[in-house]
Image (cartoon, rainbow, N blue to C red; front, side, top):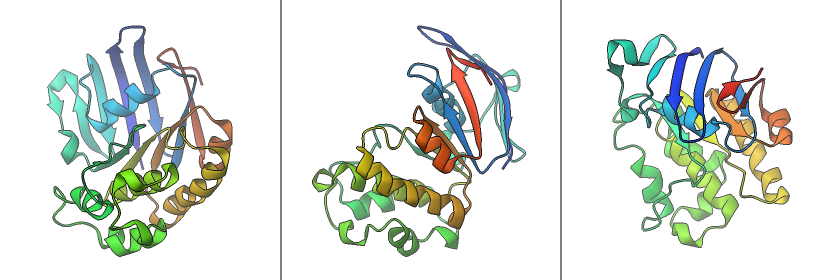
Length: 214
């Protein structure tokens, strides 16, 4: 993967996000304290925010170039996103949540078929259940499965384990490692937990007060 983030400039209420970085690792952790701008950066890459200035290029495709008025809609970027709140549909079953992600992907890669992903994330027993009936760890796995079923070329994970206790974290991290190793989908992994960074990431970007520290 090659992800170029150049001249990122996004004024926010409490600070301004300013980023210039090029990313090539399979898993890159975006590490920093709360309020550092980590989620805002993911939103820009996903196409959920419009920056004042930015050039964002993924594997040679320009996704955002404010100077040339280029802005690829989020649904056409080929990016899977697992936000902090997971964004699962509470009124739908697990199966219908998973299938929802395929609406805009008529020719999904055979690598990302439903049966394989359900088996990978060990959610066979959950498939007909409602979202409200799931535990926190189960919801995390369903959200990951839904993101993968969109056949992403990049996976954005925004503190996916933040609301889990240590026991559940120890169960979910191996699933993330399997996604990294078996599917070879590059990830940007937002966290403020060093143990998650050590377990999964090949590269770390330290973000603080809207700026890349190192």
